[in-house]
Length: 140
Image (cartoon, rainbow, N blue to C red; front, top):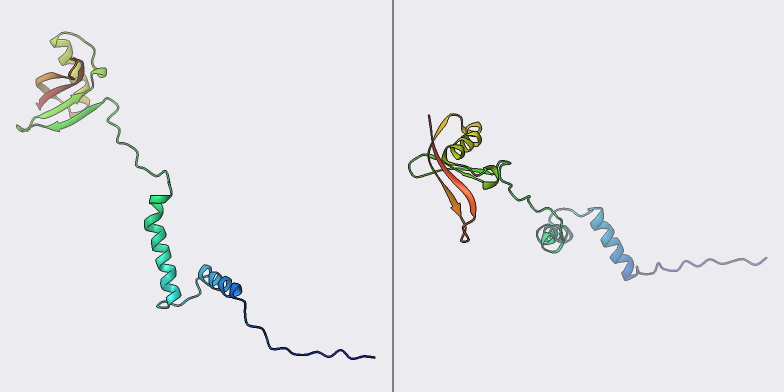
C-alpha cells in the first residue's frame, strides 16, 4: 500500500482582501480601543454622517408651519399698553358700526375676558380689499 505523504506547507500570507474584510468587520463590531487610529476613524465617520447627511438625505422632518388660531386672531400690544387684535375678515360679516363692534366683542371676549373697544380699522391691500381688522381694546 502506498502511503500518502502529507507535507506541511507554511501558511500563506493573508490576502489583501481578507485583511480589508477583517478591518470592516472590526469596525462593525466596534472592536478597537479608545485612542487608537481605527477608533478615531470610526468616530470621525460617525460625525461626518451626523453633520452632513441632512444636507444630502431628505429626511422629511421639516417643522410644521405655525398656523394661526382657528379664529384667525393675532393678539399684540400697542405703545400705550392696549391690547391690539388682528381679526381675519372671514370671521366678520359686513354691517354697520354697531354690528361690527358686537362681532368683534364676540370674538375677543372669549380670549381675553371683558373688554371695551377703543377703536378699530380695516386694513386693506393696494386694491382696496380688506385683509384684516385691527381692533384696539382695553380691559374693563
